Image (tube, rainbow, N blue to C red; front, side, top):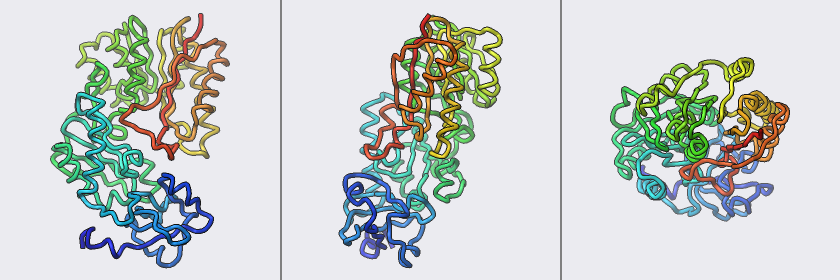
Length: 404
């Protein structure tokens, strides 16, 4: 039975009287498990099924994707309770997202779908030219993955589509980690990605997340503007994010520090493809250990950037995460030459900009350095923020000038 035939037979979930129905009507995209009536009929709804959402007075509120294995029991798909969620519906959402990205960028390398903010809750799609990588981090997207892939190919013309099933988000949804090829053939070599004048090598099958972090694009550009003629240190560099951008901006040298040998090898290849291999060097190891060692060596850099993984991925991890951000700032600040620049980044949605900034400033102060906060950056415009979902505004980048 197709979606059009099934619309009159959809299950229904109903909000309990204590649920914040007004917030959902005003755009909040999530319904939590303590907000619904979980009777026997509700408990029988299949994981990933599409259901009608009603308020406690049984008035319709829209269509939601249901997952009883998740704390987020329902995600809003369409405010129209009569909508048909099929390939054409998916294609319309994809087309709207594509129009925005094509306005922003002159080359097809970007995040195409940023989950709830692009109307496809829990779905991440990154595009690398003719190849796209889908992260279906919600159960409904797993159920409709073939229609999603077909609509993606129709709308964008990509010839290869990969499914990346790794990551914490899928685990929280109770989903498997079975990655696969949905269309075409998986690339047998990293893909060269041009961005901010630099060349990045993206491993789409064996790298972190989808292979590259597009979200830092504007922050890479800001750092590059500070880097002409500069000695640059890029800590937690992954495949060379800030370091390669700095070289494209005219840095005299860039040292990339990361714990992953494969990531550093990709960074070196990117530098070679930019004809900047002679200005690029690597140092593998734990970032905190390397920062400590560089301090003991008396190393100095004109620009230091630290872009760590999420130290506070949840509210439970917030306090130790904030201490880690403070420690990172304390170790990095002494490496900045007088009058140089220090950039500190956080991708922890649990650490608000105020808390992250306070930890960073405290760490710089503990290092005995005086500073000016000159710029605050966020994710690029291909990572839009859902106005009612603070988690979608996860990325923060603080740029300080450390005074002589």
